[in-house]
Picture 1 (tube, helix red, strand yellow):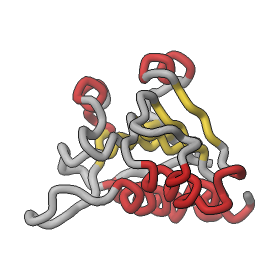
Picture 2: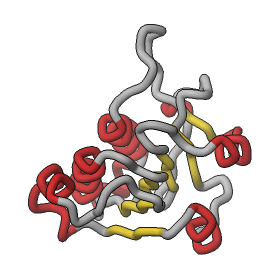
Picture 3: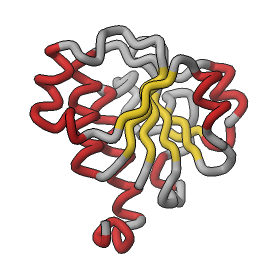
Picture 4: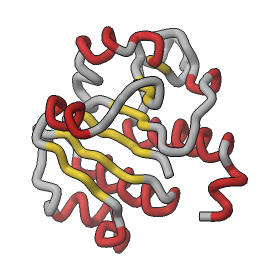
Length: 155
């Protein structure tokens, strides 16, 4: 199982779609407050369809609380547009944490700096600034699954 961590998500439809993705991928979803919407909001449920009640979800009051309760070492990767290291150069392992920042601000700079060697990106052309958050999580999560497919099939 992988852990998707959304730091301060802002758009309910993205989070709903990511919740649906996590159910289908067997991933645990972590949401770090502040969140830009109520997770019981209709838009989240609509995007997540009937998957939301099947979602393995943890909601954290702050980044500090998350880091206090989860041991983050070399078992985590931080998706950002501020690095040149592509996600497919990483050897993901079961249980890894894959962090994504908010749609408007990304992962806080101090976190990216603390884990600089673990920053990853999705390659894009010079015309593109970024991808939609739900699409980005799907790209990276399913590559992690591809790398660990033998284990995934047994789940």
